[in-house]
Length: 354
Image (tube, rainbow, N blue to C red; front, side):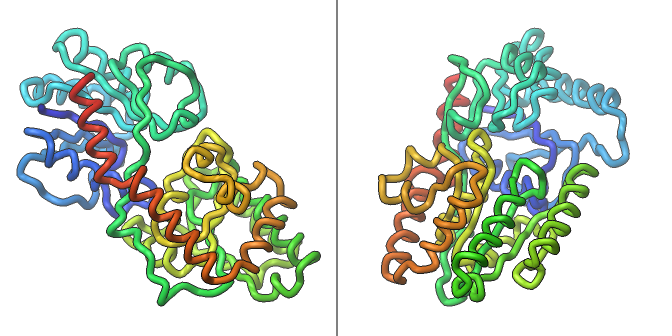
């Protein structure tokens, strides 16, 4: 099978999409040929059956111009692909429709964000199949949907207990209002009031950058909140970190916290679990992987600073033998359900059946 992939960025160093080249390499081992069309081509490995074409968004800011370039490539490469796989790009799935109807190509889209839109509905109409990580990550029901899990590189995201720092907390991800970081700051203040002994030991690292002007304002708001709550000495703001450099941050953290609401199944949750962190999250999609004990200890109520503070405080009291057991359970979940190898196998099955 010959595959054409559209992805906004193909760059191992990107902080958000740096994982995706690894997916492409895995797919290439199962495909005759892969052609990747991207708006930004950064660092990636050369493989004999992978060809990369850049629409060069930086020097070609016109969307119309890039669309015309995309259509030219779809036509020029028409003999080199059987199926188009659009990754997190509904507008480009829509733009691929002519290749489906006039060139007889199959069209599949990956989409894993809870937010619905008319653009997404149109893209879904044109697609032969839609792939997502978990059912909760797609905003409406459709018979075209296949949930295949995520693709975590378990050889890169691996535990290293020798460097794990006691009482260390980590948030890693895009800085945006959807991430609910204000709730995390409020929970630390609550711990300071109710459990000063625990509070005196803890430290929080916040890693991630803002991707828009609105997100920049949100980041500034968070820093002001931290100052008002007198948390400055407890927090390190690390900024944006390349995907190629994030593994050591997970390895050093004892507890990882994710506050994104159900419907957006952040890969960082799974990367942290694979790396041996104790992971506190509010995403209900995790319930399908947890037994009752894990649910009680590692899931908190969405947007509830008091519940998060209570769960955090209990984790700080956890005996090391118990913590080690939970770390093993968490990593085993990733190996079983969300490894890159398993994902590639599932993707190949869905793509070939489309």
